[in-house]
Length: 200
Image (cartoon, rainbow, N blue to C red; front, side, top):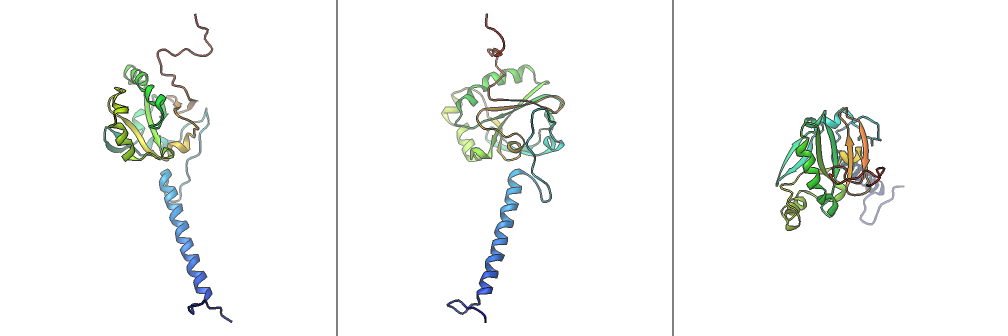
């Protein structure tokens, strides 16, 4: 005996339509999830790196969305290969993230062939292009006198390779592409005293 609902449609047809709909929704969510982390069909998401591990080759060739003084451009990190590379994870609500930039800029200018620092604003901040652009034009940012803002934005790839729990977070990759250390304090500071050194 076939069960019918009130309008005369067989229940098995309703259940079938529901499951087909559910499959489409799940497929769409999986595809969107891959897109968010920058992986294509058949590729696995990047695995988190530990200190001492080498970054994968894809790290250098993966394209990121860069915010550059109001414009955006897609580019890789290939130009920084062979230098000490510091990934500086930040968000607009983190004042120390911004106050450190003056010192960081000093070291970037002093050692352009040996050091690169790339600011990274990941998706977990929920700060999209519009929010970043408004922030970069705000009095709060311009009053710091840091010049134009250059940062990877809307990142889903780097935050998976380098998981972090607070802002700012700095990941140091040495010239050989090995993750050397992860710090929560900016070490690119002329006034920094290493904690193991006695003050005179």
